[in-house]
Image (tube, helix red, strand yellow):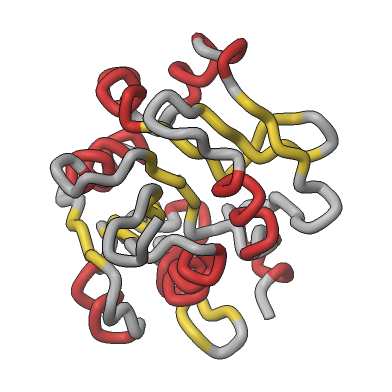
Length: 199
């Protein structure tokens, strides 16, 4: 695999408006002195994704202004308020025609998942038919890798806030689970109480 032709692209979903955080976009929450979106995009790159697409939505202009996202492909989801499903569809759509064989999907609000876990999921990719998920003590979590053969089905099933959940449930038998509990903590930053996880 050459660096010119990445087999797997990173896809970061960072469009949410942080409704339960009082309307603070998750992408702009501060973590280690930088916006969370910058941290999450760097995790994908550090793990080995040379092409990373970042889906923006809530306050996209402010995110572009405040976060250093040079070198990443920024994708706008104007209908971000309709939920994560639309962001996943916009992200997969932006990868169509790029020649990558799989998309490794991460969520912006999971800073406890670092390059080690992402790298393990990436390493389990075996091409366009791959369906790989991180697991935490045997329970499926993020990140999730979708081979290109699954994109149309995922996009069709991704409605509202469900993202790929329905598709993954339907194809549970085909998923390769990669245990990551020893290297990552899969908490979400959803409410003000969760802000304690940010540094």
